[in-house]
Image 1 (cartoon, one colour):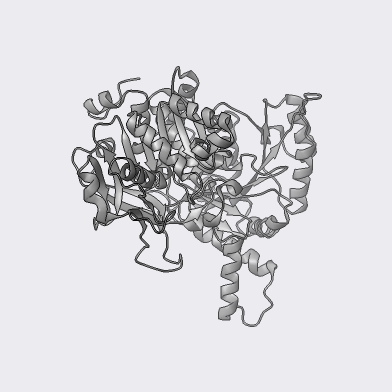
Image 2 (cartoon, rainbow, N blue to C red; image 1 turned 90 degrees about the horizontal axis):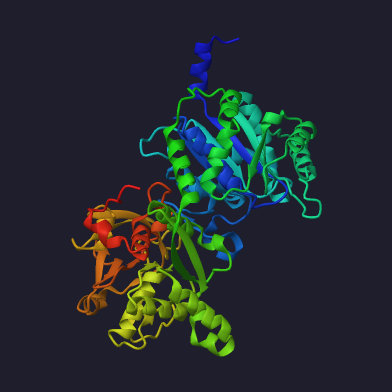
Length: 578
C-alpha cells in the first residue's frame, strides 16, 4: 500500500483517459455527454483535452455533404473535422488541432506509409498489432498536446468513439482500447457507455433490453463500463435503474440518467447532480479538492436564464441544407449564444433559398409564398456559407430585400460574396455581376477564384484555418463590436473571394470593405452605410463563438434584430445590467 503522499504524486503525473462509447443507436448524444464530462472535470481545476474517433474511412470531414454528417467544423490549423469537436471547443473553451480527430482513414494511411518506408522490416502488417498499436500511440501522443492558452499539458483526456459498439468498423478501435486499459493500468482508464432506454408509446414503460444487449456486447469485446449513461425521454424510474444495475453488473450509483432537457447547458449540471465527478475522481484517483465551482455556477446561471426568457427575436436562416439542422450546427449555436446574452428567446426560421426564386412561384406557389412570408416576418436575416450554385439566386433575393427594407443582415462567406453580387447588380447596375464559381463568363466577375499561394497537401485550393483580418476603418460597427480591436483572428474555409480590382466602384456608393487581410488583397469584412446592420464576413465566426463569449458578428445581428444595437454602441459596448 502506498502512503497517501506518493499516491498523489504518482497520479499527478500520469494521464487519465476516459473513453466514451455508445450503444443501440448512433447520434445518441455522446458528443454532448463527452463535452459535459470534460466540463465538470475542468471546473474542478483540471486541464482537460478531448479526442474524437470517427470510424469512417474518410481522412477528414472536408469532403462530406452536410446532409450526410452535419456541418464540417474548422479548427485554427485548418483541420476540417467532425462537428463534435465544435462541442468540445465550446463547452471546454479550448482550441483543438486536426489530430484531435482520429479517423480510420488517418490510421490506415499512417500504417501504410510506414509499411512503404520499410519500417516493419518485412513483417506481415495486420490489424492486430499494427493498426491497434498505431491507434494507441496516436491517442497517447495527442493527449499530451496542450489545448489551453497557458500551454499546460492536459491531465485528463476524454476520448469519444463515434458510431455504435458492435459496428464492424469500430472493432479495431475497441480492440485497441481493450489492450490500452492494461497498458495504462486500471487507475488511469475508465469507460463511460452511453445507451438508449426507449419508452414505446404502447405501454409507456422504459425498456432496458437494448442497454443490456449493448453492455453485453461491449463486455464480450473486453471493455467493462464504469458508468452507464442512459438517454431517455423522461427521468429513469428507480426500478429501471435497479434492473440495469442487476443485469449490467454495476452499482445503481453507476447508472446515470440523462433525460431530455430543454437546453444542452443543463447536461453538465445533470451529471454533476448525480455524483459523476465524485465517482470519476475516486475511480481515477484524481488529485482535486471538492470546492464550490465557479465555472459550473456560470453554466447554471445560463441554463436557468434560458428557461425564463420572455422576449422573442426571430432570425431567418436562408440556406440550402435547411432540412437537416446539423448542417448548420455551429451557426445555430452562435445565434443561441448571442440571443442568450441579450436575454431573448431565439426563433430560427429555416428557409430553403430555392423557395424564394421565381421558378418556385411557377411550380409551387404555396411554397414560394410561405418562404417569403417567413422572410418578411423575421427580425433579422442570416445567409450562411455554402458551396454550389443551387439556391444562390434565392439568397440574392433575400439579401436584396434585407438591404432595401433596412432589415439587419449578416452574410457569412458565400453570404458575404452574394451581398457583393447583389449590390453590384442592383446599385451599380451590372446586370450580370456574379461569382466566377457560378458564371465563369461574367463581364463583371465581382467574386473570383483566389487560390492560396502555398499549394501543398490540400491541393492549394482552399483557404483554411485561422487568418488575420485588419480593420481599415475606425468607424466600423464590427470593429466596435470586437471591442475596438485593430485586427481579429478568425477561421476561414473558402476558395473564392471578392475581386479586389473592383473595390473602388463599391466604396464610392457607400459599400465599404472595412476589413482586409494583412496584404490588403483579400476583402474580409463588408459594411453598408445608413443601414441598421448590414454586415458580411468572409470568415466563419461561428467556429469561435462560446456560450459565455458570443461571436461579435452574430451578437451584432441579434442586437440589431432586437432593436438594441444603437444603445449598446452608445454605452461603449456594455450590456445594461440584467
